[in-house]
Each structure stands twice: as C-alpha cells, then as structure tokens.
Length: 33
Image 1 (cartoon, rainbow, N blue to C red):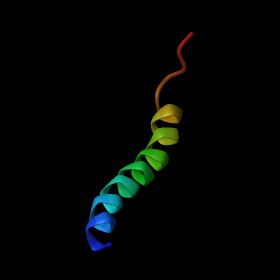
Image 2: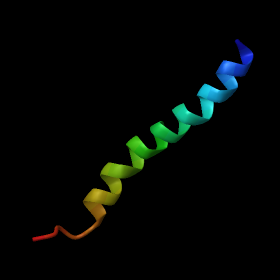
Image 3: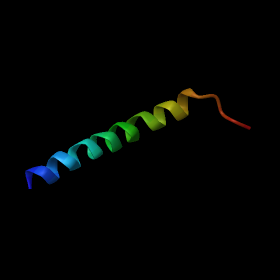
Image 4: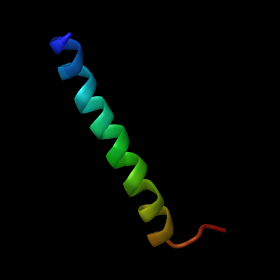
C-alpha cells in the first residue's frame, strides 16, 4: 500500500503542476497564425 502511494504521488504532482503551468504558458506565448 505504501509502495503504491510512493509511486502514485510523484505522478499526481507532475500532472498537477503540468495542469497548472500549461494554461499559463499558453496564455504567455504569442498566438500562432
């Protein structure tokens, strides 16, 4: 159980940070034609 949580936590944090930073980078980058 603990091993699964240790494997699951980094993936959740990576998805969470990607979900937050993706709209910011999309809004900061100039729109492509």
